[in-house]
Image (tube, rainbow, N blue to C red):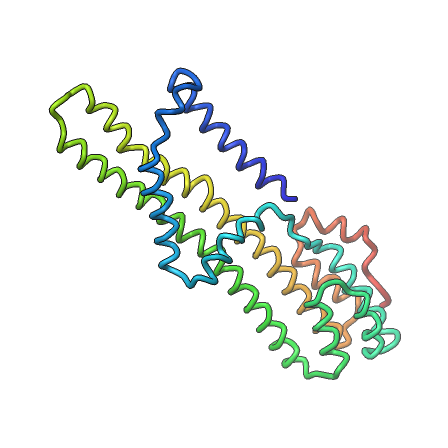
Length: 265
């Protein structure tokens, strides 16, 4: 589980609740922030306006994708580079055909697919084209999910403002009792509060986390493509290692050096 997402979401909610309770003079004051009609306009309007923006399949898939922010991305780049170097050593000693047996022990389907293309003697440019096409398709699907939350995040404040305008119209049409103006104004502004919470507590962080996870996964696939094509080209394992280490940040490279990549000269 990705603890950062869970902790961040809970702490944000806790801070808002603390501010509400502190400002309202106690837990009983939370009722000031509850209004069914405002919630219906803001949340209902945001959800169904987002539904209008996408297909039903993408709408359902987009809602389900919020669970992905709580899952740790299963990518260990230094470990993956070490595995590629091991494969390059095998190919250097025993030939490319020997990689077929090694591919059976791989858990990553993308890397396994690349290995099998190499074993089958596929042209290097065609291997790159096939793998990059698959990578771009995965990237597009991931961006569709993050884009869903961007859309809903834009809808939240907009529908909150619509609810506020509805409340203001009702308030201005009934100002005979000045003592009710303050409470009615408060109810009118609650929709803006709901919209801001939807956008900044749920939608925007969810989209950002999905994009961050996608960046990590795409980088891993780029490393795989470069590594596999280098193996197919018969490059020295140590040269491959240095090439792939350039994808790592400086603080990750020492651990990779200790991992004993290298290989024969």
